[in-house]
Image (tube, rainbow, N blue to C red; front, side):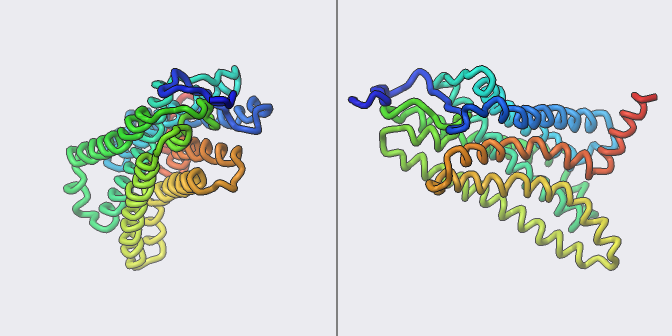
Amino acid sequence: MSDSNTTDFTNPSTFILQGIPGLEVAHVWISIPFCTMYVIAILGNFTILFVVKMEQSLRAPMYYFLCMLAVTDMVLSTSLMPKMLSIFWFNSREIDFSACLTQMYFIHCFSVMESGILVAMAFDRYVAICHPLRHSTILTNPMVVKIGLAVVLRSGMLILPYPLLTRQWPYCKTNIIPDTHCMHIAVVNLACADTHISSYYGLFVLFCVKGLDMFFVALSYTQILRAIFSLPTKEARLKTFGTCGSHLCSILAFFIPALFSSLTYRFGQNVALHFRVLIGNVNLLVPPTLNPIIYGVRTKQIRDRLLRLFTHKGT
């Protein structure tokens, strides 16, 4: 090709991650809040795992799902941040083609996994509030394990076509990805072939997987709210609704930015590129950062255990 910015290759050995286009001079400053969020995500989710392991009273389905959420959040943020920080701090923009596809798989896989875990947690709240006498017989430990395996297998199998399809496309435009990480749609857009199958499959995952997850969460909370409003006293209603507060905050922190980011990437051609990239990064980092804070502050058992831990250390 005559264009100096294009290269004839069908399988590039490396991609170049541009970072945040247009804001390259501010990369070091942008790295400060992102790095802070990453540290909070790792330390906070590790603390959740430690508290649940140490506290015998937290051996319940809700906290097992919370541990799954914590592990998912740590893997999701770690799939994203080390390479992003190497771009911001050391201008290390190259990423091997296979490493790019691996990062793509992990980011999308654990994002779908988090969506599934939030559905499982909604189901747990539904059973606990709408069928409290049957909670221990419905959500037994074997059932929790089966739900966990189903969530993991679903996300692993659904996202597997992403790298498999992406690997087969010829790339003859450029190997520069205008992002900090290898998002599926950003890589597919570099291919010089008819990639409608990848685009349609990505939309299928967005609407038919995350969309269905949002529907099941909404359905669960419709039944939960009906049960809460049927309680006789205001105090009972507030106390019961309080058990759902942490989960509702996690749902809002995950689904709203994820939906906005996905739609902006696909249909927001008039949105500034640097804004789209920033929103995409914030979407992936906010839930892992906020979840341990939400559950640490709002869940009395976890909060009390943490207070006892620090009190004993202080004495």
